[in-house]
Length: 139
Image (cartoon, rainbow, N blue to C red; front, side, top):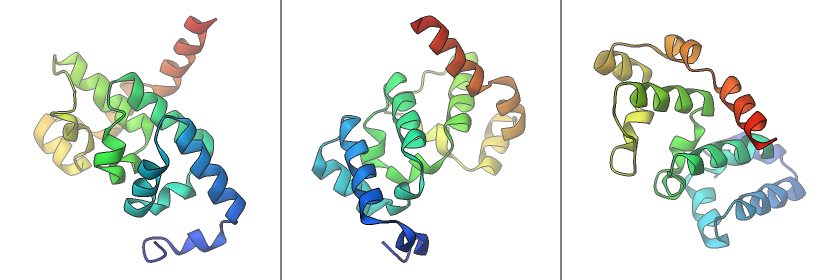
């Protein structure tokens, strides 16, 4: 674990325990969280709010299980994942468990394949606006 991120040494055991519990509270079993931890220990470098936000977004688009199958993709920002997901919706491509890898290709390959860059997507599909609209709907 430390090979992938030496900064994990700076985390207190209570911080790690809290983040582990937070992951369990989002719907993963303890064994699943252990698997995620082994595959991507850097998840503990993210804030609990950031982790919860990412998981909630993946849940909202029906991709809860991708974290278990491909935990390293979880490091991509929710903003970029949202923007790419919305882009695919706008061109009539439904993202599901069979083709979700389209969301996670490198920026260079994304531009090459789809002709649109990260900055354009982030500008056009604003995740913060999306989150605000979700809050307004809940009220």
